[in-house]
Length: 136
Image (cartoon, rainbow, N blue to C red; front, side):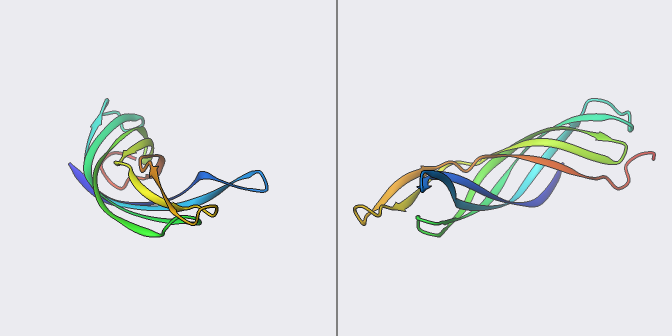
């Protein structure tokens, strides 16, 4: 078992357009503390495919162009990751499973805040270097 901390910054389109063009107007920051379990399919250190599962706490914050900026607090979630270690380099693809929440978008026409459901889960790409653990 291992745990770690990571962070991610994302931009997404929430439905606003400027002059008919889609504009990403939602920036999201997510940090996490997740306990993980790694399973390696082989003990060959030159090429080791793996799968990872984990659960933990995600800290979320949103900044919207036309939404309220707010910290969303802590959410319990999980991750699923697949990848391979090639010698001492690690490559992987993961999905972060985080419950969605409601944000409030300012409607210029009515002047009211409109509730909008926001998805928090996201895909990520991982790469890194492994220190120790096997032959060069």
